[in-house]
Length: 565
Ligand code: ADA
Image 1 (tube, rainbow, N blue to C red):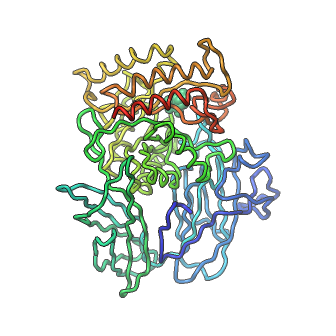
Image 2 (cartoon, rainbow, N blue to C red):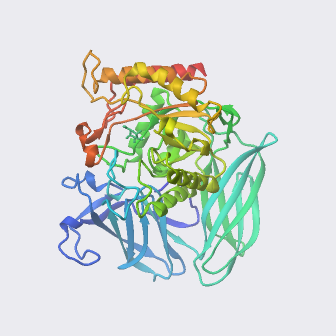
């Protein structure tokens, strides 16, 4: 399922995960819009690169299954993620399309006769004018239905989304609630709406939703006697929203929330009023067996490794992650910096404006309630120097704030003292490789001293903000061992990470140290292909999660930092 907990007691839903018919374009024998013949089957969710013979396949493929419809309800398909452009057909008719692999999306199709209907999904992971965000890059754009799919049968008026913002008011927790209802029918309809958290709740009374429209309700649940959520005590609560028609429940949606509040005070990031010091990793959704479609067991194993290392944060570089991974972070108390999809992309691509807006808005809309997400990010290492680039940063950062004003916003910059956008963020985030791309470990301390002096100088409009080292690290090829200072050896990576963590973890003006990166990951061809093994080899573990020498160095430094807090 899309989430790790049941979200409906009343709404009819089932998982569509399992084997679907499958044919990649390179194996098609016919030329119609949709295949007449499927050459094999594939597991959903999965990346087609995990199929022998399709390891490097970049193009289109079609996946097919059959689903039941129930007259009087609309058929709703919810996709956790289709990589990277998905188009859905029901009984041969196009009913929806979504661009970008990393945000959930849905199609709602009313009017189907009771019985079995054909669903075909065309997935396309090719590069070109149709995708601004998926380009040749220092990570791989896989192909397929790479996250879970759910089938639901929704009534005429149904609950589309519920957002909850926990706030402390005079020592008590309250929840600011918004409920978005949709009415797919041709009639204006009235429903009673109730939201409950345990014994407390908000009754919105009878609400009318116009035909074919949506309606957003806002309310507050006050005086909640609950325990806070944080890294040490990740207390979670279920928020139930119910719709009643003439006293009978007709729809429901369960969300899971945690009571924590983010704020900034001077150079500090506060969680529930206490200064937060983040230490952890950048993690791509990448695995040699599963591509970006990691099963929950593999996600859990990654988080257990990070906990063993003493981490309390993971940055979802450079895109929104699978909601099951975010559920695990909620449950384990792992803080998350989540960012909309962008890594050093060009703003003048024809599809950029609509796709960065979709990725950003959909990320916040679908991921709003995860307490583990403590920072929203965007536009990793994009143009934050030019006037045009600044306009884009201002627009996207404002978009994040418009969608959610309860979390601090940032972008990871590699532009150093040329950056012209640091005044726009709540947190200054620096990607710096002073030990790898610019000199060696001895370069780390003097370089960050210079950078912080520049940042907090009187003339700098960004002075006085918190700072996170959002990326730093060094490459090492697993098993390459030499005593002398040679790049790509595990020993050299140890020295770089040891010195970087020594400097960053204890610096009073640095609130976070996020290592690049957790595990080695696959990259695309293009110039990235020049990377050894066509991989980004800066992992502390390799792609099979085998620890490099740096593992124990990082573990010592991070546990020391945790103990010093
Ligand atoms: C950048 C980028 C990462 C990765 C890293 C590296 O900071 O944000 O995605 O490419 O450099 O390995 O050089």
